[in-house]
Length: 314
Image 1 (cartoon, helix red, strand yellow):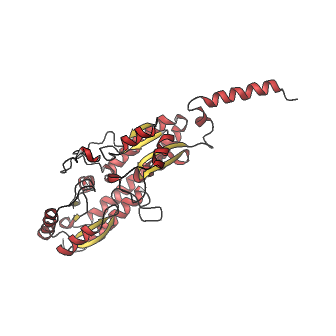
Image 2: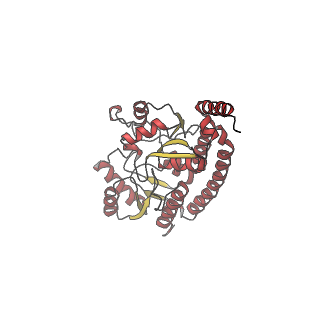
Image 3: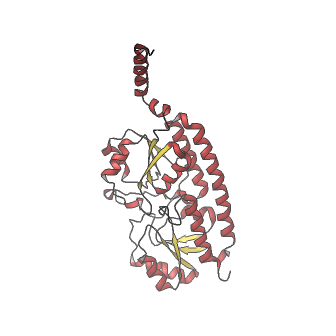
C-alpha cells in the first residue's frame, strides 16, 4: 500500500530542492538546456561547439548581420532577460550591448571572449560617443587569427564550466576536440599562404577587418574603410586606394558579406584589379552557405584568397 504521508513529504522535498537556484538545471539537464546569448554569429558557433547539446544558444546578430551597426529588437531584450550566460566579443565591438543589458533587466553573467588577447591598434580614430559605436583604437576582429580563436574557446569553456558545473567534463572534452580541429585548419591556412608568391600576398577589402589575419599569416589587406563598417570611405580614400593598387600591382579586391559591394566594384573597375570573390569577415553565412561555421568560414576565406592571388608571376 502506498504511504500517502511519506509520498507527500517526498514530493514537497523535491519541489523545495528544485526551487533552489541552479538545482533544476543540474538535476534535469535533458529537459532544460543552459540558455546562452551570444552577441553575434561567430561567437554563437563557438558556444555551440563547446556547449554541445547542454546549451541553447541565441545569437543577437545573426548570419550575414553586421554587429558594428546593429539595432537591438524587443526579441533580443526577451532573450537577454532569460539568459543565464551572455558571451560578448568585447574590444568595443558591441557598442549597443550595454544599453540592451540594462534595459532587459538581465541578471546573466557576462563573459568576454577576448579576455587575455592582446589587441592590435587600428589606424581609425574613435567614433563620436554620441553615435553609440565608439571602437576606440583597438581592432575588435580578433577571431581572424586562429591562435586568438583558441583563446575565445578557452574563455567560453571556462564561462560554461562556471555557469553549469555539472557539465564541466562535457564542456572540457568538447573544447579539447575543437581546439584540435583548429590546429588542423591553421595548418591548412599557412600552407595555402605559402603557395601564394610573396609579391602577390596583398589584396583590397571593403573595411579593415583582417588586421589579425595579416599579422598571423602575412597576407596584406588594404581597406578604404576603418575597422567599423559605420565608417564612410571618402573620395580621397578611394582615389588613394586606386593609386596604391596600380603602384603595388595589387592582384585582387574582395567583397565582404557584411558590406555594400558597390565600393569594391568601383575600385575594381577604376583600378583594373579583379574581384576575387566574397570573404566572410564579421559574420557567418546561413547554414546552407559556404561559411556556416567558423571553421567553414576560415576554409572558405583562404580558398578564395589563394584562388585570387596565387595565379600570376611571382
